[in-house]
Length: 213
Image (cartoon, rainbow, N blue to C red):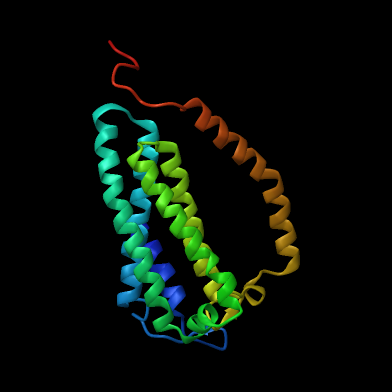
């Protein structure tokens, strides 16, 4: 919970902007501690809880599954409300983001994200009502993807908003080439191992299965 909440606060702090001078942090000790960053921490915690709940729907059955469907419905409402509040709050604390989202022609393209999010939210709710666990999990992932895509669009091309761009923050070219070579070798191994792990532990956990003395 602490790690998840902290991740949300880091996201909120980046979105609200960081004071930088001469490529160094120039803010105070507690500039990160704001109502917006705290709420982002709460929102991410709710979202991860919903994602974990939907995963448990895939893995459980019986009374536990029934309880989880009810809990995931409540978490869905909380998560959507949290995303909505963050989306409305963010333009008020950043004129640059407000101009990006609400100025044409950008707005005509960017508003595909909330429209897609609304459709995904509808499909998520429908999946929970119909008790379709896998669909609920996948639609939750779509909402997450749309939310973080919106945040990325809001601050692009900055790594540290309004201070350091992605290209300014990038490592030297030789270092990037070295990292790319390592990733090209290790990433397929990680994907294969993860896929095998999911395959081994596929299916639902049932009370009448497993080892008994």
